[in-house]
Length: 429
Image (tube, rainbow, N blue to C red; front, side, top):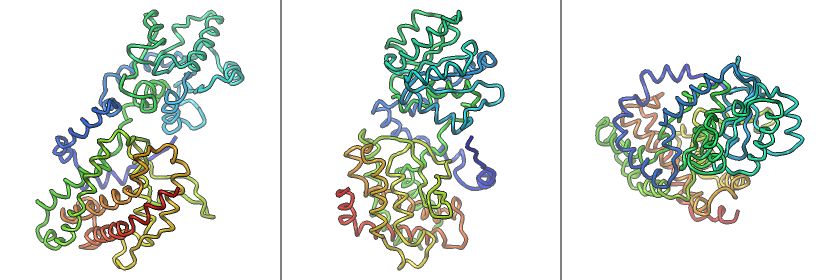
């Protein structure tokens, strides 16, 4: 199980950061962005507030506790991946039981040897099968279901006590079978939520709850973390209501950053464009969040508290922000700030090696923009904090956040100077 220690975060949050009252003030501004998501027909954002389904799943899991030793997912692709992720992150990596809760097994293919060996390893009398298919007609999943239903019946067991269906609320073969068997437990997958976005529906939450994971705690960790429109509004508010002396001192920098507000407009276009896909995103891909061994080889990514749905520009952009310059955001000798072409090439080649076939044609056109997006956002966030008397990031010296903002502003200008040249590197890959 992955573990996080938030002790120091909680100590800081008592006096710094975004308080609930601040979030409530910003809530009306977020409505239009949620409407954009809804207009695409992507309902995954709404399921975070579906408390009724969470309660239904929790009640069912409590009723089932003690009756079964094994919970088995019959499903492939998005019907299996979400639960697997939750199991490995919040349960046990090696499949051990959590206390007295059942063990989870995911059967995501129809290999006969796999099914045979699995069947030998469990007691069918204490096994619950979750048949998960959004369409209700996935051939592999139905084949698994029919096989194990037959095995249950041959064991003289009541198959209705050993199966749960998770499927479309209205249509599909699985739904028809459920309608013909009133005693069969069935959970809905919302019509407007695709399989690979369904981890926070019954697809992922039901198996998680059945093995003892507290599904009440599964929420977005930092809402609006990389919402550039929101960050820009906070910037403008700081210019209006912040420390007047600091505002006057930062006049030239403020003017320069406001002149680049087209980067915000482009972000709004991205949010409204269905060609941009939300994926599992780290959101904090600076080099210090990669753990290396003594030989300099990457071992794993760390600092996973920011992992949540996001756009690819967040991860690519933060790599550019923290890799391209030979100096960090803390450098006050601005002459040292420059963009290293060879590092840009490495980012493009490395990212494309894994993601080239996953990105849409439209997304690929915005690869360079990713750097503009994150560097600009970090610049205005540093300056916003400076104008607000360093209430978020804190400061080691009086102009610390002002220097950070200037640093990032200069890095942005250096990047933009090479736009045509760097874009050609992307086009060649």
